[in-house]
Length: 280
Image 1: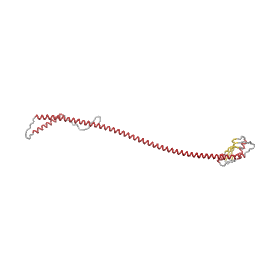
Image 2: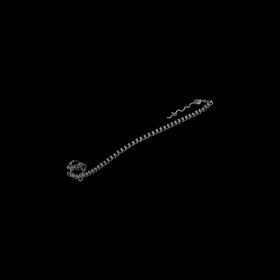
Image 3: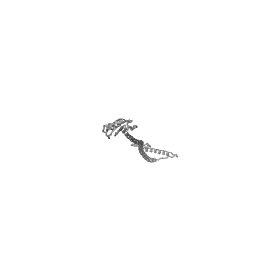
Image 4: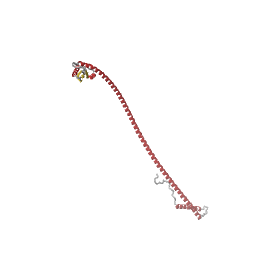
């Protein structure tokens, strides 16, 4: 990874140039050795002839070879410079590629981090939606249960209402029937009691002494009896205004005892305390 300052990546070591004077001396030495070698070769006369080399020829050869050496040195320097420039450019290109790759790597890492974050957020959102859906299903189940319980309660209440209405209707019907029966019984009893008024009045009248009393007198008597018609008490509820008349009326009731009463206990209970208007 590249940091603030770029580090040179390992590569081929650059060619180190030999100093110009050393190289020149070395080349001159080689040339001299070469010339001496040539002279030695030509000094052999295979035909046993002597070869004579003039000094000017040697100096001329040395001069020509020096120029070639200079040219060679210049060419080597130029090649070395070109090579060094090429290596430098190659190194710069390589470093540029490294920087580009590092930039791409950082961008890719940033993209990956962003995608991972988006994926995590999406997963969190999905989990939240799943939880919300689960809660919604739970609420729906609770509402359904409440609805079913409400329907069941309403049905029970409706059944209870109908049952109550039926019972009340039957009760009302029975009450009406009982009322009607009672009314009929009361009417029948009243008719029976009304029919008893005349025999009781007749029995009392037969025992009433009218001697010396003015006509047209009447009083209301409250007669208490026990089963069988036995009189146990007589009170004047409304006086005739004549004490003698009232007393004789009371005496006549006692004398007529037992009075003619019905043997049926239910009807007797209605006339046990009998209020009677006595008019002899």
